[in-house]
Length: 488
Image (cartoon, rainbow, N blue to C red; front, side):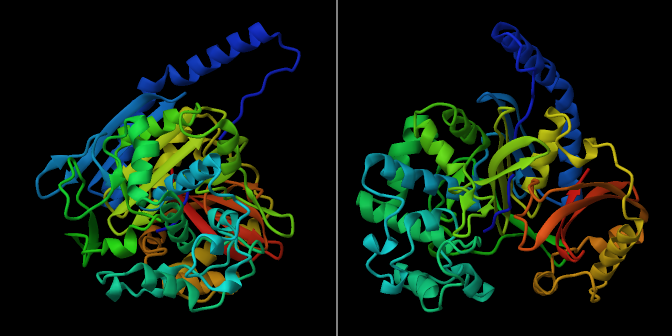
């Protein structure tokens, strides 16, 4: 389960514009942008159909909203390949880490009730934790700044079917030292949200599922949203698939005692999540001040910020402020991205190993001019030599060769995860061009910038009939800390 990450604002008018004219201008702008939604719909359908074929994903459900109102919803492909059942906006998908925004919401409801304080030590609520963790607060858990190791990193794939008790999960988190002192760094760790779910149960004296059902899903009429259960009959539930030995297979059994603990585990539909999006425009669940706090980048002990709030990635992309989150687990990829000042939300749910964040960003770019790299006019290349070196870096990565440009941490992760760059060899064998597009500060949509990164440099790669954009996270001394690949 990761964050994928999520995955934004910005129209300006002269300050002297009279307020009536300002409102009229705003209505005209919105009309011009969104009245063409039916035109964009054709582009969306073409793009998604191509994406599913290219990534070999069986099915996808989509909802696009403006001001909390659905302006586009549709299913693509199959929810069940065996039954030849089409995906629809009411197909239910495993949300994976998109669950985290609901866990954070539950905690904030308890804060609103006055039964939890963000500054409280987590040992005040969970007695099974070591006393040395007394300086870890609820806020540290919400913002991924606790230093607690990710329990999933310690569970080998061979153990994914086993039963995991609460005690076993806590042992996985507590029997090794913290990665860093609380508040010193940001590091994505699912353990934080497992502990938050335990706090919700302890304070509310009820199950995590029933608390969310009574306080969030019930009031909003989200009748299809609940904790996933393999034994329950769940209407319209999508089957989960992955590719193995070049063939589509059903995802192997994943024990819910490991995977469904507040860091993941909810199941929902695009239309139910549209109701959730609409509720974020008013105070039916949380007040505006609570939401603002959840969408504020976390400030570390040294005063620097990181692009994560409470269960939401937060950032700015080319002048457009956004909040969002992604979810990924075997057989599922999900993304909810809210472009705040544009008041546009894109919800993408998939039942295969695709990139829902990539899809959500591309669709957002069809509604918001200037949002995506494909809409930017390429600038003059300020450093052609660096361009050639980065191009060679891709060839080195494709052939799993060492590269002087790559930072050691990148090299280790790239070697560890075999799926990284799996498409590179074929893509580079048909390479037509690799050209510079732009350089930006490290605040753009995508993975959190790694330590030492000073800029993101983006390039357009044309290969065969495919166009992709590669964004390299570069340090001051021109080393590659990571890269992100997005389709046109």
